[in-house]
Length: 490
Image (cartoon, rainbow, N blue to C red; front, side):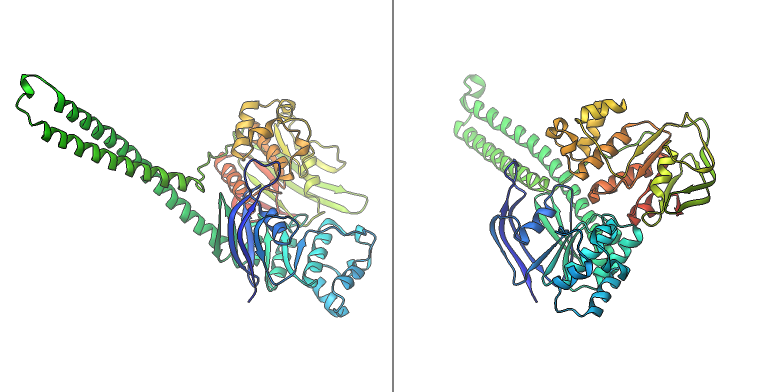
């Protein structure tokens, strides 16, 4: 058995006000198929880079194995994949190379054409096969980008046969299919759960509910003790006054007795204050990892008719192939329609057509010009500040920024140029804009790309609770199965 031993790890970025990791200590068995999860910006990618030595930190990371980090850049895009494979695994026989490529779901012909001609999904699969063919423990960061639902299922099956790795992903179905341990970065702590993501999620709900109950109990105890302390202190002061009060009424009173009474009450007040301070300390410690968030909301606008649009006998072709031939689609108010299919089958093209894009087609499209559509594209190409972005769409800036705050945006982000944002931040900015729009129909193209699990789950609840009409493309099968009222396989 081999382990990765992390001891008292401290790391901060130069421009960061708070540390990414503080006194982190972990033991990771290299035989585990470990999912590394956590909210965007919590340090998952940073941890992988620290483990493989790409970043330096205080503390120690010990392991008797080499590491291979995915993704990695292929230096020569004109290289033939078979040659790259042979260099990475020089001891492999040709049949072993072909088997590895086949197991990950690639046609063997991709091995014999230039790397630059491969699609995004083919490049992802090939580089992962190359990662496991090379010597070392695999550290895999977001491998499901560019993969459709079928490709993700293939990749999960491939990884489930491997000996051990650490993988970062936000796709719950994918993680359930390949992982047996979950390492979760939550607030200032890192929690390890034995089991797949579903087991971790159930345990997390149990812990969060227990934390919430404990927090309510401590806050109630704090309020009660505060009242008791104030009342007891007041009694003590009154007793002390009695001791020195002159006059006929108190002439015969034993001042020693009154002094002892005052001291006893003051001692009692001090004890109550100590208990109050202890409760405060427990609440403060609990709040380090306690998150109680406002729910996201969608406010759809009713259309004047129940049927929002109809596509009849739709035929749509590209120079290379026919995407649709005799395709029919109706969308009624309140439906949530998922378009599912392999990459390149025309899902995004269909969404653009419905949104009024300049796309040549044959057939009938009954889409009222009065239909208000809120559209989120697959790739968010944005620039300017968030204020300028909100103004360009005519949405309320204050409400828009309130939603962004719920998505975890910091105040400093409100003045930065969006072009400097991470892909996850750009996607959140686009989704927050859509959530701010009162539309009859919401159209989202792969809305969950780059988003952490918590954000995905909040969007899922918002959609289901809103009554909004939605057409969406998404490869996260957990989200599709939970949200969709109708699934259309293309």
